[in-house]
Length: 325
Image 1 (cartoon, helix red, strand yellow):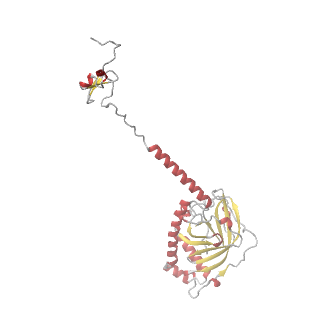
Image 2 (cartoon, rainbow, N blue to C red):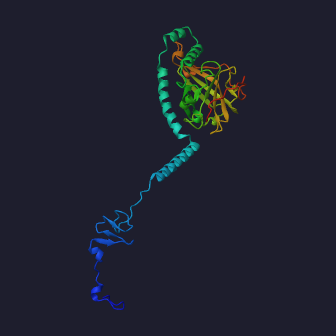
């Protein structure tokens, strides 16, 4: 007989005994079914298979790739900003590092060139040349004829701006990455006429970065394996890249230095002109019976002109190097 709904349960009815279903090895589910105590089977319920009662859901593993990419991009941006800052106050550091080691290698090549013996044909020719000017001109022509583009042929020293670099043959892109280069359209020092040298101002060691600081009378020294040439600056100007008349012959020996201007731009060229005032024979250029000191070095016949840059000759459509700053 069922107990009355208003009757209080007896003390025995307040026990925490399991439902009957649990005593038979099954547990009731919220959906109305049951699952065995081992969790191996379902009866009429909606619980997922193999999910134990009270177990937390599995964690989802998020990919770390997006955060890694973001960190990499931030690092690259910071490096680019650092590179730009160093370039503004000094020069572009990455190309400078490359050119520094290249210059060290070229300096060794130049020393080897200076110690190299002349060929038998050159010695036979030099025996018949008694004047040092002739010997220098012959050796200069031989070096210009046989040197390869990009190879070391001499060195330039400009004390006023602290420039001291190995000079290479040629003014192409790859040649100027090695250092200042002699225009192939002009003569090597020692051959009458114009010697023109181009160099970068902001990249590739920036050998001519301070070229604009040269003033009238500043000395420029070119050391070649056969002679030392001393020039004095007589003026400067800014021209368009197409105005190649500034490197044409002018009737006397001179040096022309060119670089892009303003810095970080290749829109114009800064041209510095210097007059040859003294030549000191070296090595095979010395006459066999004489020893030439700096005091005995011969000077150019003409004195420095009082005017600015010398007159120029014909122009053409070539471009003045370098093509980038």
